[in-house]
Amino acid sequence: MNFPGQHIISIDQFDRDAVTRVFDVADQMIPYARRQRITRVLEGAILGNMFFEPSTRTRVSFGSAFNLLGGQVRETVGMDSSSLSKGESLHDTAKVLSGYSDIIVMRHPQAGSVAEFAAASRVPVLNGGDGANEHPTQALLDLYTIRSELAGKGRELAGLRIAMVGDLKHGRTVHSLCRLLQLYKNVKLTLIAPDALQMPERLLENAREAGLSVHTTSAMDEGLREVDIVYQTRLQEERFADPEEARRYRGAFRINQSLYNRLCHPDTVLLHPLPRDSRADANELDNDLNDNPNLAIFRQADNGVLVRMALFALVLDIEKDINKHARDLHWYTPQR
Ligand code: CP
Image (cartoon, rainbow, N blue to C red; front, side, top):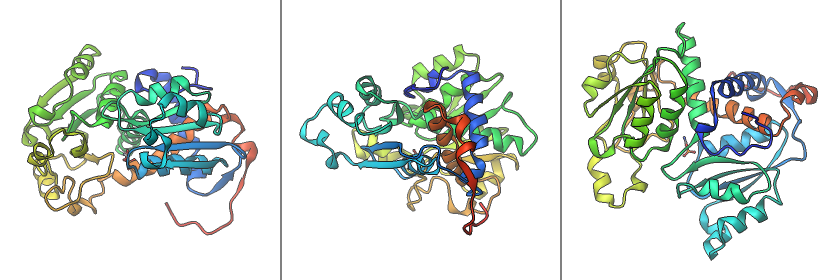
């Protein structure tokens, strides 16, 4: 994969070498993300950060990543604050906004919308999530986190055993992660969901054809045993045509410390792309897990900054110049 100037729309654009390249550059970003060093390599550059669906992590971590490289961020948040709500097309919006920015990140509720936008853009576009379709940068930060958590236990990605739990039909993070795992050897994937919310058939077929061992079940008791990683997901209530149907599944796949003690190996790492639904009737990843050292959800969220800095550096082709524009930092910084 040749990064400079590329749109990042789908995780399928990445091969093993490209993933390794992103992770190597992400590792180089640690002193900057931890505020030990400061770089101004992107001074003068503008990120158009366009989020037409709610977001906390993706929007702010992309923005922070660009700021940490010295660039500035212009945000468009919500459909109502954009002329898309007056009937302007994605094509015209892309033509206009790509004249105002050096690079654009976009999240939109419609599958395929970011690709349509990118086709008309004059600057690189990164997909921050398009409907239930894909979330490629989340998959990269998820795998970066899995690699790092396994390394802490003396393990490698090869031979990974991972269970994905919850709404696998509508969850774009698991769609992209399932595709990304196909690049690795001997991965055992257990998909725990009710039949109606199981991973789309097309993705299951692709995973099996790529050599993954894939097992589907609706039983937590069966699926959570003997795995290295449990990747819990949120019930994507906003993607159901009938809200009543969504409510039927609320709280059906909750994990708490007692379930973890009963079913999981004590080394099992818990991930979630977040947000976790902490309302009492959902409580999908219980607060009683908060002191469990294997709950890696906030390390996972932190890694979003590293991976997104790496993607900006590679796409804007400044990775080799970062240190030239760097200096030590002198204000108080807490331990991260
Ligand atoms: N993981 C993720 O996409 O979170 P946000 O919806 O808060 O961006």
